[in-house]
Image 1: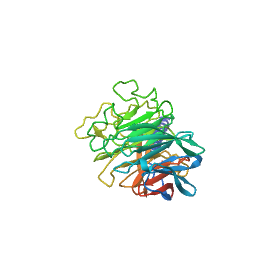
Image 2: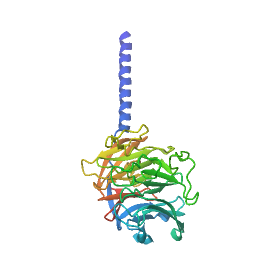
Image 3: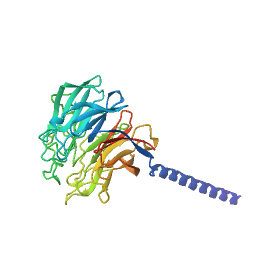
Image 4: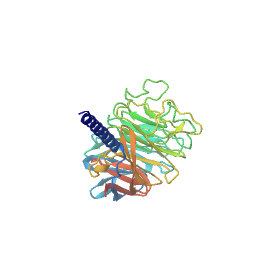
Length: 378
């Protein structure tokens, strides 16, 4: 009797241990990197130096071309220009027409460009029946740029309906004016404004520095070198920024949808997680969720989007990005703001300058040479 009881206890213990092991294994499997989604790039159009894209009315995709034109991608390819400001901008350095965005109701269209003097400019147009109304054009915001590089220039309407504007540190190299950590300038920052709330705009009352006399109220986040491309996750509202590094490290930054702003991403004290030229890591430094060095072919991160389309289920929820010099399209598997896997999607988009997200959540890769490719299942 005692023997049977002891045997039963031993068997029960073995079963319990096995059960715990299986549970742990299942948890490990959930957190382990999944196999990369199988994708291909389908060329859908050719543009003249495309720089940005935005989902437009009627399921269209609007494409900005660096010289100053905007064209609409439909079922039959790219149409003729629906906007042409080429006489008002320059392509010197990193300048040109750099960003476009619609508000949520497609009632207003915003463009971000550098004018002939190199000043970063954001203009607004009213939209009626899917068409830009040129006579309604007005300038929302301007920022003088001391150099021809690190202009940033990306713009997005956030989940809150406000306009977010990314501006680089002003250029040259190494942030010579210390703009990244200086809250008294808009350079090296991500801005958040209400373009319809005032003339020329209003500053939301809940912006993080709105009551700080030593800071610009427009600032949402700072410590950025050249936040060339940023986006909001259409599924969660989380913010992701691809910030171009100086010489050694490219980084991707993240903030949850619940953020109240004020994040300091470290530049120019830090380049990624590394002190820059003897810099001291700020106490409030928000470290990147992903960084990579330049030991291979990478030289300039091109931020993308979290995939929320339906065509590629295995890619859902992953952040898709690339590098201007490397061109390989990659993805990050994310969980609660942490990277759980990095995938090489085994396709190359060329000199990838930007990504675009269609109204249906499908993603497009824009190469500065002209190709516009949709990411399709292989």
